Amino acid sequence: MSRHPEWCALGAGCALGEHRAAPVAVMALGSAGVPIATGELTRVADPAGRELAEIRLRVALPPGDEAALVHLTAALAELRAVVDRLGGRHEAR
Ligand SMILES: [Zn+2]
Image 1 (spheres, helix red, strand yellow):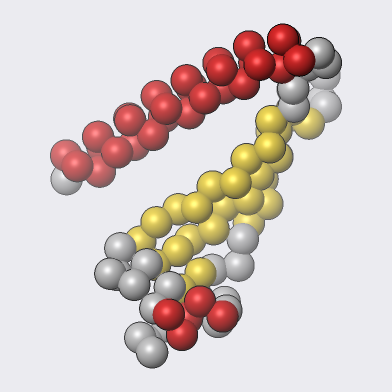
Image 2: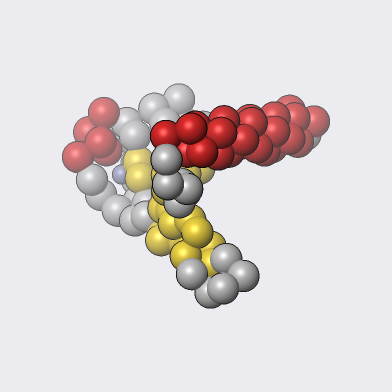
């Protein structure tokens, strides 16, 4: 077993070399003060020693299949742009 980082929550994955912090809950409020998205952020170190941010996200969808699909498509495009920007920033270092 690898040594635990000080932020490790000592979970079952430690025996396999993956260390995880306790997740942190986040919420985004819309202009009316109503939650429009919630999520969890978790710091992870994989067995190769890379440090990662695991992001679980729940986004409110409009009613109706077509409107939900359009919204989901836009959300995925935005997420792709964020991942590209963050990945590019990391590669530049
Ligand atoms: Zn651990």
